[in-house]
Amino acid sequence: MNEHSKSLGEESIPKLLRKLSIPAAMGMMVNALYNFVDTVFLGRFVGTNAIGALAISFPIQMIIMGFGTMIGIGAASAASRALGAKEIEKADNIVGNAFLAVAVIGLLLVTLGRQFLTPVLNLFGATETLLPMAYDYMNIIFIGSIFLTISMVSNNIIRAEGNAKTAMYSMMIGTSFNIIMDPIFIKVLGMGIKGAALATVLGQVLGFIYVANYFYRGKSNFKIMPHHLKPNYKYLKEIFTVGFPTFMRQIAGSLLAIVMNNSLAFYGGDLAISTYGVINKVTMFILMPMFGIVQGFQPIASFNYGAKKFKRVIETVKISTKYLIIYSTIGFLIIQIFPNSIIRIFNNDADLITLGSKAIRFITILLPLIGVQIIASALFQALGKARPALIISMSRQTLFLIPLVLVLPRINNLGLIGIFVAFPIADFMAIILSLVLLKKEIDLLHKTKEELIIEKV
Image (cartoon, rainbow, N blue to C red; front, side, top):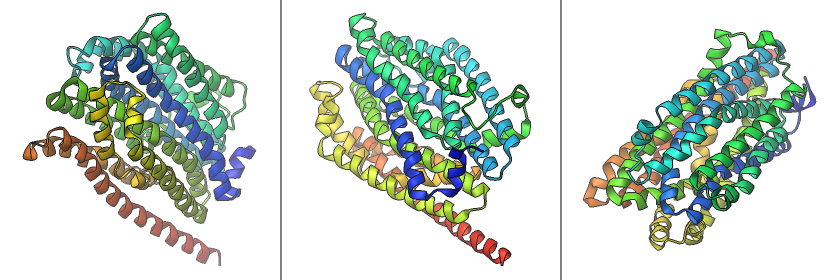
């Protein structure tokens, strides 16, 4: 076991959490720049319809990322717990099976995604105006899906062994290339939305090469040999079971996008879709670093749970929650104070700025407390408890938000305002549910810790 892994069970929690979370948060923020930068450049160089096309494409990209995240988080949780229990061969087998699974799924995504692209875009609410641009963008994005999903799995596994900086560098390489090449491909070479997609895919390829080199040179704590790639039902089941809540959160987000895009088109047309596309990019940019903090939290919780160090697990939950609330409150204040300036980054269209400024304030009202739901879901995944993680992951978007989006606009002809008000109501209900389940699990960890102390005595 290398020094990175040993520190998970020995180093002080605040120091360890900062060491793992800061690079992960920076990496996730950089990762969020992929779509953020595409949206800014396309909004500036092509127009608001290009932003709408990205709004249609984004939930499909989230599904692609969902497969990588599902396998990555599932494998990271299982492998970390195995390392904590000093079951090294089991950890290597888990990682090997994760790579096998993501390679197969990545190839299927490339093949099936491009084959059925038009009906999929129509399903996600593409109008006649937005369909051609969305098709050009996603037709190229699907080519890079295999590189993206493998990189996402690799980065989760690298973080699972306590090496967060390498995962951060992987994401920074790809995004930096994307930021540099976006204006060149879009504007200078005149490729438009195709140029944005090409810059994104080439950045993903570079990130893939970086992590592949990391494993090939034997820098990882996991030593993957050919026999570790042999399919093992037990390990595959654990990977998919633990990672499934994250995948369902992505699917729920995509299902929400279908409802949102069609509702927005009905109540506000292409402008409303473009407006929500901008707001979605801004909120994702705020949320991604929060998921980075969680990615630093998960290997610590998983490793120490496997090592039966429950006091460290509880301390990690408390400190991580504090960090999330502080960060999200700062993001909330920036959005509430400067909504016009934020929307204007993407386009100077007066109607877009007016509608976007009003909507983003409604949508982010409960942003300071959203970290409670994120940490609760992450804790259950870290402990290998898929059912409560699934309930929390599905609650906000599927159980609460989608029904509210469908119902509220019809009440007193609220229309678009009803759609935007649905967000804080759904957030409030999901936060309450998360608090109840989180408290119950923390109480159980306290009880188990005390029982272990009694056994030792």
